[in-house]
Length: 183
Image 1 (tube, helix red, strand yellow):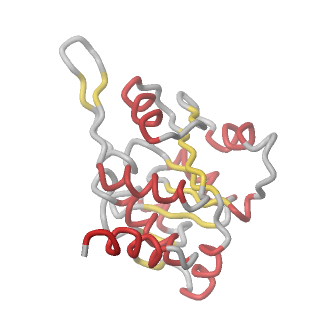
Image 2 (tube, rainbow, N blue to C red):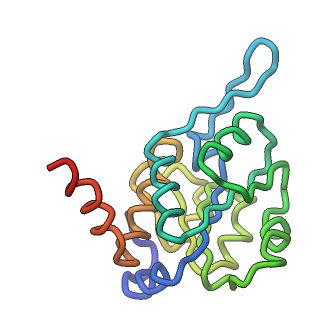
């Protein structure tokens, strides 16, 4: 994880996060769009990201997806990961997040956002912790607190999940859960 803001203040922000808002194309995928001969849109997701999302959920961090595109593949992936709050076809992502938070007790100080392009910038600038990927549009790097080492679609979300769990002192317990049974 590469810090784009001072370490100590970013580490403090990580301790408070209770919700992670994710973009899809360029974050959960590599940003490329695949179309079948029938015009069906195909997406490729990384299993490392999926397991990282599950770990966040197990540790009390809700994962929300807000995407500008509608996709049956995304609907299915979100369902498989137990993500119940999904907004698709939403160009105004800030408005979509505000709608999701209407009946929620969370404040923006408890929300992190991971994006890669200009439609993600409003949320990133208005939440506590903004994260981007190395293949993001350069303007996002000027506003982000962190940038993953891994590109979007190649484990970037897992890298962030591990960082968040470490910042909240939950990572060692997760590792212990797996090593106590197998080593």
